[in-house]
Image (cartoon, rainbow, N blue to C red; front, top):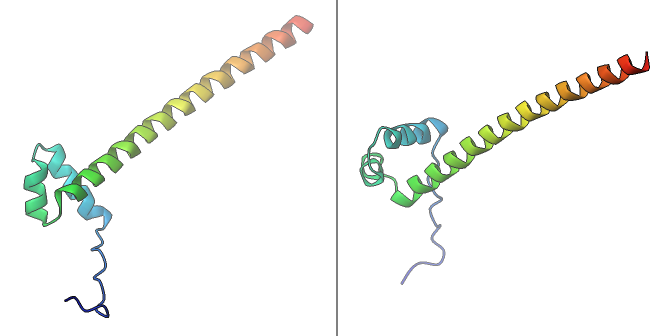
Length: 89
């Protein structure tokens, strides 16, 4: 029977460098199973990191597209304001 007073071990923490190395290994073509075994982590954890990284990249791409669209619209607005000013003169 398990001891109810025994502390449950806290999950192991991994720094950005460790996660980055794991993702690099996956990007180089190693399988999730290989990387998990080599780094002594679960395959599920690697899938979680991989998914989170993919979402972060997609967010960054989306943000850069929004910034580019914002700049395009600002330039369009400036041209329209200059045209309006020129017509009023």
